[in-house]
Image 1 (cartoon, protein in one colour):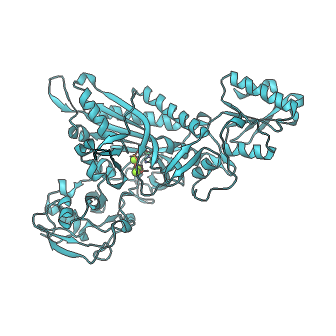
Image 2 (cartoon, rainbow, N blue to C red; image 1 turned 90 degrees about the vertical axis):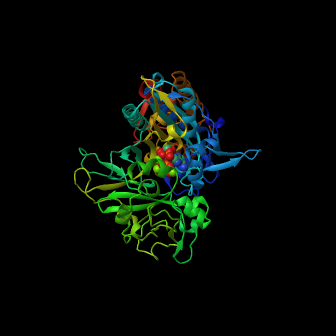
Image 3 (cartoon, rainbow, N blue to C red; image 1 turned 60 degrees about the vertical axis):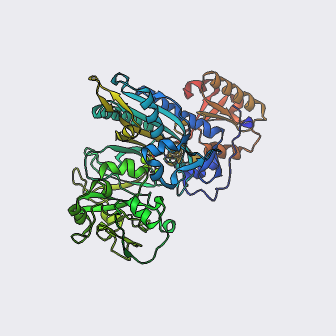
Length: 561
Ligand code: ATP
Ligand code: MG
Ligand code: MG
Ligand code: MG
């Protein structure tokens, strides 16, 4: 490939909108261009990197026994009604109607669709286990699309789903995926940590996030300094909470009669609120006792938090004394359903000591409750189960913390979707059983940005070889000068013949511009053909270390390999 024929629009200025290194550098080095908030075009170099990451992911998924499919992005609402997620997913779901007025969404994830597929195609235990995956676009109307490819509204994900006969099978699929993820992130060159995805002290860990360690990361991870212990977990951030602005401040708190109203949905209906404003109250058992977390019902609630908390009050905790214990509410005050109330919650006040949370008693609810004004709130930092300096829950040493970019996550789902979408199989005895599922995501575009976050310097990107858009750049200092051009062409052709991915900078630019661009784009190896060309010598330069060697042009191939 010749640079004169390639679209590599590098920028000298630092784009004002880019706050983090990967965003800045991917724009400046000509890998991406913005179309709208959280929506990007990948230019030729960007597409090449993406293809490399995809093929590493594909290889590892196939190695683990995955079979690649491709599902539609456009999903009928019907499927989402069956899982109940149409109502609870919230504003992150891109919804649209067809010409007949039927509801659709752009897939943010594909549990419903794939479970429906497997429900239709799998009948017998003989067809299990099954690992199906795809690589494709996902759509999420993120509250804050930002940081370029790190948090897009359209992005590329690999999503794999496992289908097993039982929990033991799921454990095995999960283990395979954990290993495959470890291989993927190692191969793309990331410094990462697999962490427990919920710090909940309850039960075994059933979800892990793979965190690329980087200051630009929006997640915070705590970990044990003792490598032999190995404890590491995401501190909960409950980012799905609506902000004050979104819900709007309400009037003073009021206790109202709500005859027959039991669930959060009923409360909302009674108050005439749209369903999206419902905040569910999850009760956790922590070292500090029972605490309630208020969370809007969305995927995070359904799939992550539900696995480690004691239950959504309205669904599972019908025990009044437990509610009272959790809330500190006076006896008889907490209703059998718990604390499901639409509340005004400041984004910073993620967890609220439920004691004050407008506990409902039979047939009465508080409305217009404002945490902080109407009852004391505890800051999330006080209630987090672990944070930096806290004793490690496994070995007691003080924990450290670090920021991370969530590049992947794996979940044990169990039978939630299989029951909802009727995915059953017949076992050896002919008995009908729900298929036990897991799901496993990797953000492909986010991984690309995470690699840049970890591999760059003042001058630009430093691509790890495995994902570099080109492995080698041949840079004649002055392409017009005959010995330089000839030597450059000779080396370029030789490397190409040998299957090395090489780009030739055949532009008539000033040497300074060419060198700057080479560093900005971040080709792992640069071969500079300059004034020594006449003697048949060229300079090799490693982008990562800056080391250079003057070598005979005939030795280049041997050195490069
Ligand atoms: P986050 O916590 O950052 O919002 P998530 O937990 O909502 O991510 P998952 O539902 O676990 O994301 O999706 C699987 C993977 O998809 C994530 O681990 C991440 O790598 C990627 N991903 C999720 N949201 C985005 C996004 N908006 N832009 C780019 N990649 C994303
Ligand atoms: Mg998210
Ligand atoms: Mg997450
Ligand atoms: Mg996740």
